Image (tube, rainbow, N blue to C red):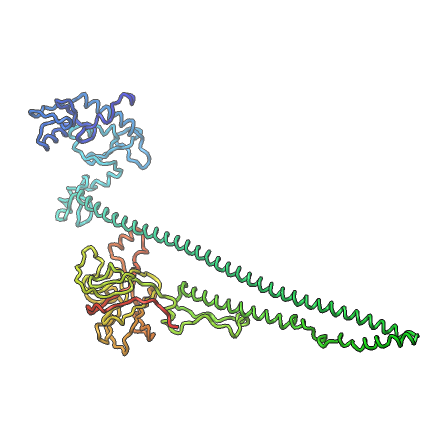
Length: 609
């Protein structure tokens, strides 16, 4: 066997026209080699008799002869390459060569005419013999018996649409004579295209779901980071509050201790003074006793005046304050109790105010069916709360106030969806007519085409939300919510069947319309509140000033069913959870009358006091 170094470079054995290994190589007069069929086809298609590489023209088409030596060298190269690359034993699951005796080599091709699989060595006749070259070769196939008609022992060549089965040409003359049959290649290409379309659709769904997963994971991560930061900030705030309380506690203790020291010093000074006075009394009493016991009458009479008058002045040692010293009230239990009661009242008031504020925050972030009123203080709280402590929590007095406190959202107008007759303010909160004639730009395909309608920027696919609009500045208006798939070419406010839930007024009439009905109101609302509960399927409209319900849609169906084709694709992709979708609901606004003074204004939600 020749060594690898003795083999020519593979690029030297490739035809420059078909870029494959030479088949029946021929040489042109200019010295370049081509496959015989390639060069003849090139001359026939181009109409020029020239060399494709050097562009040298020939007066007449040369008589080409197969370069036998070059052909043998190419075949030898192929054999050497095949033996080095492809002469491997067939492994379990691989198609073996049907011609090999003993150990079976791995098959390289399967002949659909011979109904046999060949390794590269035994495939050589199909590449050399002219009649065998016409046979149809495919990649190795293991189930050749499934491709043969068991009745006629012929290859399947046609597909019967009537029976949805593969048949041979003999079957067309027997059982399938009147049936519709087409070549297998046509059906194969058609079904392959269908599968490619389905695969493409599944890939799009896969990409969409993967993008949604990434967005959800990113949202969860951002939410987690935000929550962790909020928790850290809250810990810092409460730590600062505790530190402040400890400082105030230390100051109060210091004041009490300083006052105690002053009272104690005053008492000690008083005790020292009294002890001195007691010692003086003892000294005088002792002298009087000595004089009174003496037998010397002369000495007794001489000292009697001074001792007697000194004894008469002992009242100065008996002040009225002896019974109740001046420092005694400051050390009494009532004084200490006053401090304790004052501290208890202050702590109870602070704790109550902080608890009510936190309770309001909890109602704003906790999902629940109703915004519950503040919890009543328990017995321990009542013991700590003084009668003079004012309540900081103002419980909702009606359902609208509860909605205003818990579900208010900041809504902004989306100017890209506005009809060309509408003008949106810079802050996106005010809507009015435009007197000038503006042509609709074809680029803004999201605009409402025929009616002066507009959507809000924010969409909601869960939970509850509420917003208020001042309508007193417009003679005719319409408010509500619509699905994101709403038709932008509508002529009337959409009904629930069209994906919209609206309420409005036509011009200066006192008649208000909803769905397919109407009602009369004694008093025209100045500000209308729109409330949506996605989970309960409810859309309600309120007169904010009179705090009354104008109209309410119930049992609304916001979800959408998936089309049959997409349902099939979801099933094939293994995504049953996407059978029904939750489209976003967008706030919907409209102004009637073509009056520039007509204006709608989105107002901040302020619960009634």
